[in-house]
Image (tube, rainbow, N blue to C red; front, side, top):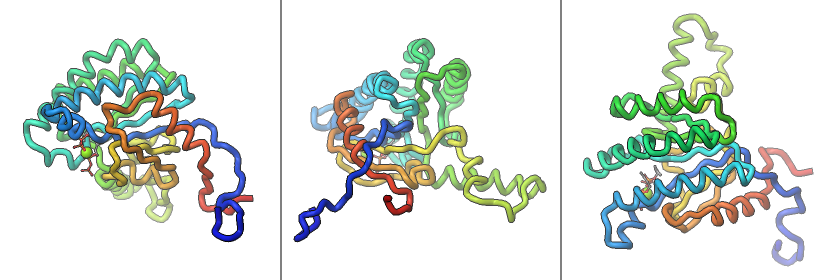
Length: 249
Ligand code: IPE
Ligand code: IPE
Ligand code: MG
């Protein structure tokens, strides 16, 4: 309520339909493990199990695009043991999940810089993208060695090459031109970004693409994030009024 007037601060507005694209910063695996007296990798394994449940729930809840943050360009700063454990987990997960992803109609894509990733992992990523390229039930994008600033810098580099080669007039460059060079060029912008574990920051995730996304921060640690909690977050999203800079009429 607006103080003294008895009027609600936000006027009546239409309920939002289900978000078409949900992006998740899956945070809190380490703390989840520590709370159980286990090594951090134990939490990452538990977190990977959650991904399965959430991917399955998406088409049932009307979400066509799901993008998940698995490893950031800054996560290399962790101990060598944690980084190599995570890389091994990604390889194992991709091998174990391949068949289920293909048969359940999931189209998988990866965003992020592949240059620093192990060859065998990159080969698996390429294979999964190819094997699922005709799927259309849900589009799962995994951000691996992804950083929003790094992505914009790499996109700018490619754009500059096109300008240098005379294929793009620098005077014609606008936001849409740059967006075509981003890793996400085929994806719609996320409508909703969720971060688990109580941290209220972006940590370099989808900086460009989330310009007008709704954010929901939840305290739950990622390995405890269930389908029911996703449904609650979607209910919160449905009450938000998105304005995109306009004045509500
Ligand atoms: C998120 O969980 C997973 C990755 C960053 C790979 P964290 O590992 O960041 O868990 P906390 O934040 O330390 O609890
Ligand atoms: C963001 O989480 C990256 C992923 C979830 C993969 P972090 O745990 O790395 O972020 P900070 O360090 O708390 O900002
Ligand atoms: Mg974290």
